[in-house]
Image 1 (tube, rainbow over the protein chains, first blue to last red):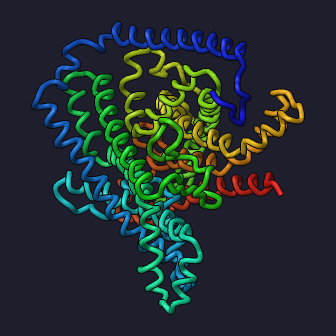
Image 2 (cartoon, rainbow over the protein chains, first blue to last red):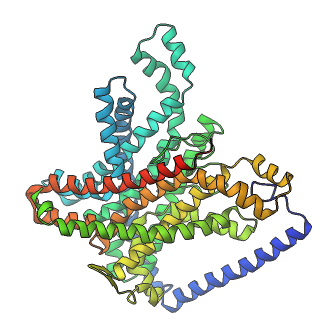
Image 3 (cartoon, rainbow over the protein chains, first blue to last red):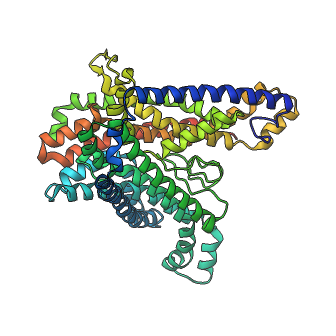
Length: 301
Length: 229
């Protein structure tokens, strides 16, 4: 390990000491893993019966079609809606007119502060209460709630993205006589979109994880498909492991896509990050989605 | 609106559970997250790999699945993870196995994000600061306590606050898993008073907004107080 903020470059004695620590920690960890595996074995979690549904074509098809596909559909619809919502309110927040800026600010702050699950329950019981069948009602409740929440987050991302375009660009555009709308659509937005695309994909990871909150309102997608399986086979642990693994794999693929787009469009900079408090940062202190950290990638909270 | 005002004690109690869930999980996840962050920035490669693996896995897992695991799966592997041994009563609040399972899920999930927030703070300290501290002859403990950590703590306040706000909102999932906190109570009200759904929603939303604003106010205060010139 080279010299960092915390340590000087280690000398030979320190390297030897660290090797000892590594071995001790490794042994302790292996022991812990072995203990958990032994408990899993002792409680019969590895029995063939409990894993059978996951190698039976009928169940695999159900998991992939009614589970994964529906989850992806919900996440994708929500992100499309959120992008539209985000563009409208993000630009609204940048408006020169106070009567437009303040309502947009209020709406964005409201949906950022309210739990998604609460929005879902409200959509399910109040907005789509008359909708049939149940699966369609759940679908649209989940999509609308995620659209509102992720849209509010993306509105901040868009605002930050437009603010991240160098000031000289807008000034030059005004200097050659462009109007406000032209400056936005011809100069600022095309440049901002490039910065924002990876952030949008990262937000999709968040949306995908949050589709599981549909569990609160009858449920749909991967989280829903788990229930009949563990109820029929009594294999709670294997089902949870398999379904979680599917979420993780899809999210890792999305993260990899975001990082690839990041390199292609933005270069070395970090993914645009918007916190709940304080100023928006685009620099080194971005807490999540850091691309240069060697693993650990993933969605926001 | 009347539904909320007439049962205001129930609403307060529900938000009490939300606050308790938040506080207990915040303390545990801050501790776990600090340990994880120490592993990830430390010199021992095995621990570094473990920290990275944990954070990657947990950040890509939906919280609902972790809740499901503690509700249905964990007790089948380890008997003590049924949390049937937890039965504490403080005033009108009952802390049962449901509450403990929720705390376990929330803490393990949030710890990964706390770890990243703290690590971001450490990474934000410029390398020259530590080098200068070593150059003037400070020992390791001095470099840490006088130069690196004070700056790292300051830099991690905003991301930590974002994480804690997310934790507060995530406590709402416990409402679906057997704890009658704010969202659980709201769901009950929406069923009982079908004609007042909008009013109920707005009242509970206001409760959350007040709590979120409290956290960000504290964060802004700390940030301003600790600001370096």
